[in-house]
Length: 455
Image (cartoon, rainbow, N blue to C red):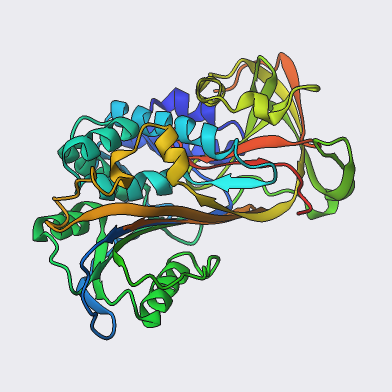
């Protein structure tokens, strides 16, 4: 990202912070420095793979491969941050692939809900990538097409670089991504697959007995531990399962400019059915900030201290959120450049909610079918035995307040320089709206719809 593009994109930064960063860039000749705000989010994904011919299990959970997360560095350690970016190049085509994946999947997962919904495309992408890296034939082809990459080597290498690029754990912000493999102790798994998962995806591996309740308790504890306790799912025993892939994302950050608690006031939120509810709205006005106005919507974002921004899309009066949910429309909205610059008036409802998804049927609509077919599925890079994906589910949680936003999600796949202000945008979010949590590179970590902030 060029210097000017960076500072144009983050218009919410206070002048002293901008000056400090620009001086640093000038003196050190750095190409990129990232700034983010107060936000927290978690996601976990479970991919379960089912099989046949499973014999009796053993006792306990045995760790067969434990990984060490990347070394954390301080928020203001610009030197290390720059080195991490230089050492982990992510191709523009790969970033675009993740964005396209987000728009395609969001168009179907968001459309199926009639209430508040929060979805993590990045969690699903990492989990499906772990599955795709162990697939062959048509199974691999369909998964790679959806993921937008040509082959498994490219997928593993780019996911590995992206993982290290996004990983953060400091006093200002956290973006902690965790993966794990839970493997039936009675099935033989390919060593190359387990090693690649550990080396490229930072995935620990465990031998377990899926008929034992201790296994589901251990998996649930792993999810809770890796989402800071936000998600504590109730998982069920399935003695026919031979493998589960888990992914979690925990993301926490602070607004660049916190909302003033004294300005938070109750007001009316207008629901899609014409009724109303009363909720607390956070209020602030920026005298000069960027925004976009497109066909049927207005878009603006609030800066985060660590990892990008939270983007809000307000449908025009008379336009429903559903009218903005097509894949091409989402791409247009989120990838659109700023079209205006001027005063932005914010009225943002505080909200706190969670979502759950069963994903198999929707992924079939998106062209992935062989992976779920008992006869066609080919996961021979994982195991020479018979295996197919039996379930994919995701659970998420998100909340925002004056300090920032916190969200959580897990997905489970089971194998069976400012211009002169010229305009104004009113981001009065008092009716159903879209939002996204994005990195500075435009990667959507969470996308959702707030239909009713009181639920």
